[in-house]
Length: 59
Image (cartoon, rainbow, N blue to C red; front, side):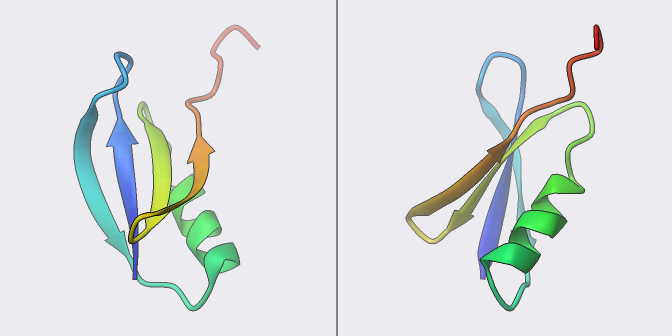
């Protein structure tokens, strides 16, 4: 099981979402889809997998 932490602009975790996925690739896809006004950090237990930042609105 994976966990996606939604991160606010100050770097604080505002909520956590469980992600059911068969592997890291699938978990990354699901976590990236959660980026909507908050950055997302993806974890598998204590193992950090990836960080998905909020899009830069100036680009």
